[in-house]
Length: 380
Ligand SMILES: [Zn+2]
Ligand SMILES: [Zn+2]
Image 1 (cartoon, rainbow, N blue to C red):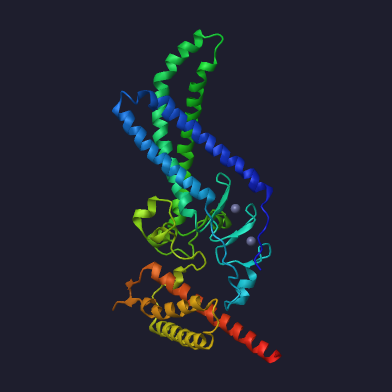
Image 2 (cartoon, rainbow, N blue to C red):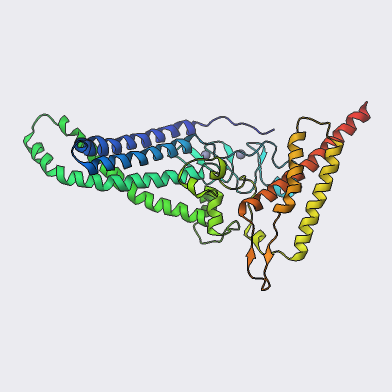
């Protein structure tokens, strides 16, 4: 049985980082809106416009931040790997702490104390792992932090440029009451934060976009110690991007995981670059024969076990989906020069393989159940 491990003290301490992030956001918001744009709102139209735009991006930032902190990075499905054929390779990737087989690109996070699908890294600033289901939200968070920093830094620079000489005059005359200079100190602090964020986030975001476009994770990058390497999962840049951001371009800018806005695939099966090479006629024939074989075996097993209710609807769907696969299955259109290959969309290719694997589960599952039934009958 998969094991749910207790939360480690590191995870509780990680909440302090989230507190720091919110404090930094409050300081910057106070500096930009309350101290700088607020007093000009009644008289200046550019200030009104800037305030409106600024609030839109702050709202997006908070939405992404909330989704990244609270979102599930990706759990290994219960009993995954127990019924698939290649036991040897699965045995090598077994998590003794969680009691689960680890799909490829899945890692155990020592801070979260659990296995995470397509784990990118554990981010202390959001106190959560970045994995298959919240990587899009995390990258969007970086984008909106950067936009807010790019907006705030010039606004605060201009404000301080105009205000500092006046405040300095006042400061040199003042002897007792220094509390009055606190808003200026906070604004200066906000300026430092936005300056640092502008510089650091530019590099950090570029690093993550490069990783996504080449279909790598931070862990895979660190495993190679930063050396240049070609990922075995690297398809085309567009397909790599869609595996994180989904196929709907309109939803690329929103931290949503529904409909076509979710990452393509299931976080378990990852198409390899080598699978996408033009396949020979023989391999296509083998593929379709394999599909037909699964289909006929499924139908036979479904007939045998249609009395078993709890899972039958799911498996019936699997068998039905499998028969649909004949139309969706990978069938590259090789031109006469055998160079250009028209591939079906990535989504249908991934779906085809996932459904086939689901059907394989059905075969083994049903065989197990058949054996159990036989054993119970023999005992009687
Ligand atoms: Zn684990
Ligand atoms: Zn973690």
